[in-house]
Length: 249
Image: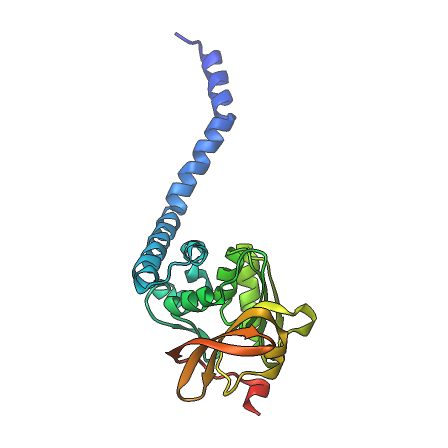
């Protein structure tokens, strides 16, 4: 039988032990954070299903693209009220009359660039920041431009918070970003009526550009630069928001 004095000392030692403090932290997390952990698990499961059912099943087999889209948390790039739909097979509003593209379109455009780790890509139209995050997750050096300042600030905050190394600025993407060119790939997420000349100049020889072109009816053009000229490789009917700024003039 332990004397009262020894029992008190044992209790004080236990109350001050790292093991108890760790147990208290665990109890708090399971009590206060349990729903959040479960929610993240649900998002992860939805992401796996999105890649399998919406992307792989439609023929996209680029391993780097698939791997990136399995890990980038798409729900973080949409407004909270739409997070439950983040992995659904359709675009979503992100504010300022702009949208985040359907997951399949993001995958298709990314795969069509045929870029690899270490390549340099210009994105015109940061939007939510999701496309930039997918490219960054592939190890690509991303330079992205957004003409709508509130969207640019919001995307930069999310990208930074999630740890994606992306160089971003507010500006008119029509002019590209010459100081960082030429680029191995250029991806445009808003539709001009014709391909801007500065983007043609800033694409590296052998590089690819993926860009929607047209007004009411648009084609997603995949082009390769060969001997200074853009050679069309494939198209897909799409619908993107129009490019603003100089593209409207």
